[in-house]
Image (cartoon, rainbow, N blue to C red; front, side):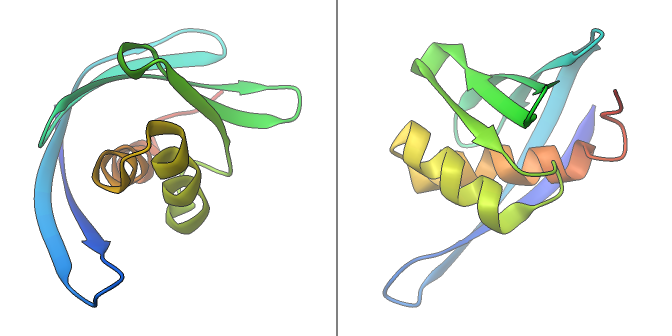
Length: 105
């Protein structure tokens, strides 16, 4: 289990803060699977392929390309667009950043 903190800056200047927790981390050769519990529950499959990194969120029927796992700005933007939800996108990006030292290939 790994706890992490998230935030999101809304266009009107308001900032929201919340906590998340990663559990059930399983690592395979080029893929990591984990569950996030936060404002919602999110199953994440994150991995590496020949051109970089990706995340797949099968419960949301969404996926996208990523930068390095610790790149909050780019990953949050990509995940929010894929999920059509900025809070869940931020949550996954913060979880990936928190796990980045543990997600080796």
